[in-house]
Image (tube, rainbow, N blue to C red; front, side):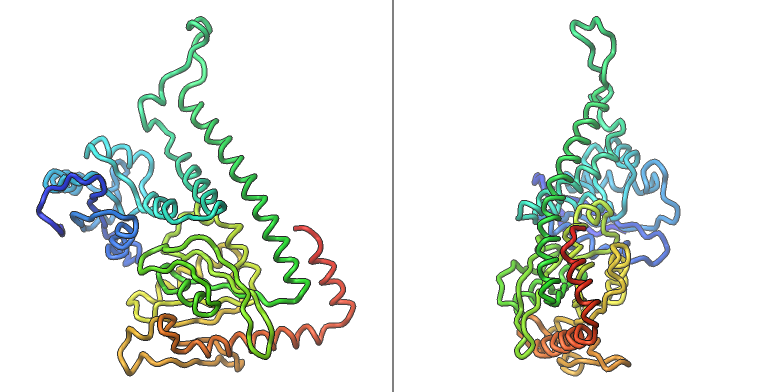
Length: 395
């Protein structure tokens, strides 16, 4: 199946053809609409979308020979300079496709990494993205280019074959990765110090999490009157932001806006952003923001919970925040909240864009502070002293 968005041949280097093949398992990963949103968020112009079936991926090119020929024909018709697969390609598959199609080919992971590289603004964020890119590139240094097979000889060639270019690249890449990890470790130490200070003061910590483009930063701005960048596109903001939020009658708490999740979030990104995601792991409660109008809402919730389990934050209490109710119809687009069997607020419906329903978030956070305070008051002086002493010890 082919969807041509334009019939004109374009010379723009930012033009691309998307390939999304159905593997037959009804996975959300094969949703071509999400791939189109990712490509648009990366500033690419989509000239064609190629769809089809692929129950058994070809070990050489992922797609079958017929589909690869179809892609080559579309490239000739549109003049696109890039092919993006909505799947993770092996280094060999990527190399074979580029040789056959005579153009650059990337997979879903590479596309997400490129978006992250454009969005990172802080020094720490740039280091994290570079680390993820290098660790992903390390898996691609396998006979990808002919110059990697040449060997460096000794002086005048008298010492015989020396270190291959591939080995040199791997060694230099390893050195850079080690340096980046050392720099990120310093940022982590600073964050640990700030976290221990909050723990000694018994200040509650809240993290806003959720699928990308669900409205996390908009909610963060409404609650804290901050000015974090917001836009209707994937991964509009990457850099974690923390602010103090005062709940009237209950005192302050610390709230953090974190990076958005997506289906099949690359493991290299999870590893690189682990220090930032520790704010989520150490939080007292999570505000799980969901696009209430998304047809894939349940799959997105499941995907976020999968990542939370991977980083060890699945046991932290959550409040499900159904956002963007202003885009729903009148009957279902009303603000409100629900309580669970324990009498705690477990779900809130609101619109972060126009502020409708924000009072229910504040109510839920006030109850969380009360519960945390009552638990602290019930502790014996010996246990309190032990907790205070433990928070002064470096991790």
